Length: 141
Image 1 (cartoon, rainbow, N blue to C red):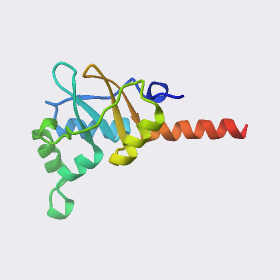
Image 2 (tube, rainbow, N blue to C red; image 1 turned 90 degrees about the vertical axis):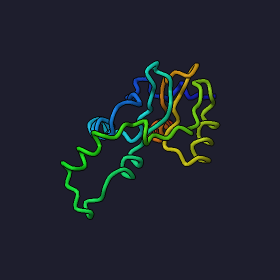
Image 3 (spheres, rainbow, N blue to C red; image 1 turned 30 degrees about the vertical axis):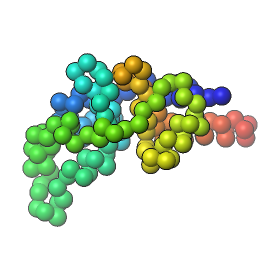
Image 4 (tube, helix red, strand yellow; image 1 turned 180 degrees about the horizontal axis):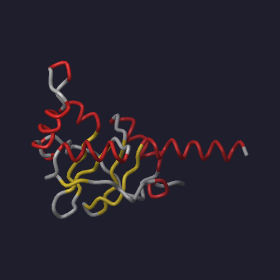
């Protein structure tokens, strides 16, 4: 049976809870990611910030705020003030069916992988799509 360890990303882009929204926004744009695990000063997993969270913190262009003003605001807001902390996590030995169930039941786009409180990886919808593609491609071959 496949486990989270078989498909998770271990080279995770994570930020510290003291970083600002501007750093999170820049990381998401530059690395083309939608989820950033957040750690404390001891590298313990404390929460998650998503692209949707950033959108919720943005002031609409309709309000007359230009990009420069939004960037200044983002630079003054710490991630710890907006991150989600009630995030379910898993360990690397969780079977993939159970991981999918957690994602579906909670309407998550990712599942941080934690070992003894420390972030060790992340499994995302994209990881499951890649697995599905690989399995279907192998079946057709």
